[in-house]
Structure formats: structure tokens, C-alpha cells
Image: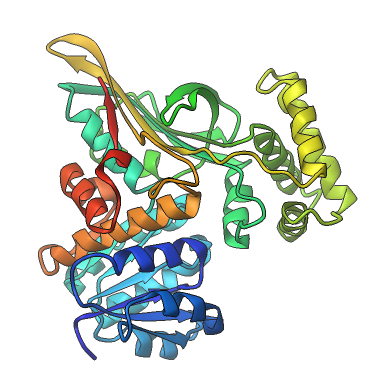
Amino acid sequence: MTARRVVFIGAAGEMCRVAIERFAKADGDWELTLCDIRPELLKPLLKRLPPGRARARRLDLYDRADLREAIDGAALVVLGAGPYIRTSEPVISACLEAKVPYLDFDDDVESTEHALTLQDKAREAGIPVYVGCGASPGMSNVLVVDAASELDTVEDIDLAWLVGDERPQVGRAVLEHLMHIAAGDCLTWEDGGPVVHESYVETDSVPMGAGIGEILLYETAHPEPVTLPRRYPEARRIRCIGGLAPSPFNGLARGLGLAIQEGRITVDEALDFLEAILKNRVSDPKALRYALRGMVGQVRRGESGAGTLAKFLLSSALGRKEKWQGGLLARVTGTRNGRPAVAVRRTPVSGTDTYLVSSMGSLTGTACAAFMVLALDETGKRSGAFSPEDWADPEAFYKALERVGTPRHEIVEALV
């Protein structure tokens, strides 16, 4: 097998498709092997790629022999199939055995923690295992490192993400991740140590870019507060907050998440309900009851207005969707020259007419493509298990984003 080969697993997924297309824009003549359980879904993508650069093949990542055959001899394996709490372990194990570098955009805490315990095994295999190389985690971690570089000491770190209205094109794995973080334990960093909060309870307002302005977001169970303390152990608090736009989506998610946690509905029932309403189909009345309960609770707590909820329900009934808006922000507080200071990095533009932040898939996939460029540029330079803040220099990452087609003015703006 050629060492100029990159293998994508879960290549038909929305985010992975973006990563493939945008990586193909970068310099180089990499041979791309696109693996998916349903390779027929890759036909439109293959037509958009440079002729002769890519081929598709069927792969069940749980078939150990087939997985080894697919990855042997590759320069890099990119896992884009989720949810990572189920998919990352078998693929990382195969990469360790085959001594092939690995990269993913894992956004689940448990699988991220597991991957980072493989530091010694990755060093023994002589390969890097790069985890969390997407938007959040991923680019968000890099924004933190960039912002923190403006300060002499670091005290508090807030990472924020906002995802807009993407109806009806939301994959089931994405919805499952949302249910996973909408209720239950949220491992975070507070008072200089790890603590467990309840996900989607604590709120804060942050100044998102792209004209969005101050917006209320929710603490969520994401990997950044688990990985970043290794770089900033002196930090008092490291927290990931996020949310959906329009705001009633947050109440809907919270209501379903709580119903799952309390055993009132199953995860599959919640996912079936979400898929139905995203496509304006008749939905399960039991799940609907819990979704409405979550949205009403959101209004009662003052997190959203009754008028906003009424408008959302009417628009949804009529099959309308909101103008897309979203992005990332990192806010770091500490000291500079002995005085209190705050540094902020955020994405400056968003919307369907932008390149980087036109959707959750575009932001995650483009960031993943940039991390791939960095990883392949540095082949053979490191081994071990890494999250983005361990290895991705901010300016090098921004340049990699440009190499995969991102206009420089869309990448980052600083508030200091």
C-alpha cells in the first residue's frame, strides 16, 4: 500500500464529506480511500473530487479484519463516523496495531479520555493519535491557546459554540450526541480541579461574533474542560458552554434529555422524534410532551421569552426555518502586567454565504481538513496521544485553514 494514502472512515457523513473536499483543495497528491458502510452514498462526492484521486469502498468498522485491510500502509486514518463513544476504540486499536497515524473530531468526553490514556501505547507504536480535531473541540482549543498567549497568567477559560437552524439536514449521530450532552453528568474544571455538574443547567452570556452579539448559552459536557487543564493546570475554571439557535431548540433538547435520563423514553424514541420533526412529519406524542415541557421550563426560568417560543412553534408548524447563524468563541481571563485582563478570540462571520461557518458541518469539516494538513506536514515528528492544544500552533493552524480554501478574513478576530 502507498504511504501517500489517506483513509477516511465514515466518509459519507456530512462533516466528513466537507473534510474530504476541503482537504483535497490543499497542496499534495494524496490518494484518498473513502470508506463507509454505505459506499453508494459517496458517488456524488467522488464526482466533485479531482479525477483519479479517490476511490470508495465498503467498510464495517466493527469487522476487525476488513478494518485492518483498509488502513494498512496509510499515512493517516481519519475517523468521521460517530458517535465516538462507540466508534473510536476499535479504530484506534487497529491503528495502533498497524502503526498508522490516527485523527478524529471526537466530541464525546468518555472516548476522549480513553484515547488520551493510550499515550504509552501510541509511543510504543511510534504513531500520533490526534483526538478532537474538529470545531468544538478542535478549533475552539486553538482559539484558547491564541487568546491565552496575550496574558501573563490564566484564571478562567470559557469556550463557546453556537449552532444554527439546520433543519432538515441533521444526521442521527449528531442528534445522539445532542441527547448525550443535554442532560446528565457534565465533567468540568472548577476551583482548580475536576468536578461534576449537571449538563445544560448553568448558563452564561457571551459576545459571539458575526453580528450575533450577546447570547445565552448552556454549560455542556464537552471534552475541552477535560483536556485543557493539562496545559493550564493553574486555571481556576475551564468551562464549555454552547447552544442552538433559535433558542427554543435548547429547551426542546433539554426536555428530551431529561426524559431519557429519568427513563421515561428511550434514546431511540427521542432520536426518532427528532428526525420526524426535523422533516415536518407526524411525531410521537409522548416524546412531544417532554419536548414541550422542556421549552416551557426554559421560558419559566427566563432563558427565553414566551413570544420567542410562540414564534418558533408557529414557524415550525409552517415548515419554516431561521436564518443560519453560529460560530466559536474563546474567552480567557487572567492578568497582564500585574493587572486583570481578558482576551477573546472568535469566528468573525457566519451564514450560508460564508466558506468556514455556513453550517456545523462546514465548520467542523473545514477545521478537520486543516488539522489533517498540519498532521501530514509533521509526519514522523511526534508519537503519543494528543488533543489540539498539545500540538497545533495557532498561526500554523490558521495558515492551514487558508490552504484548505478558507478566506483569511473569515478565520478569527481578536478582542483584547
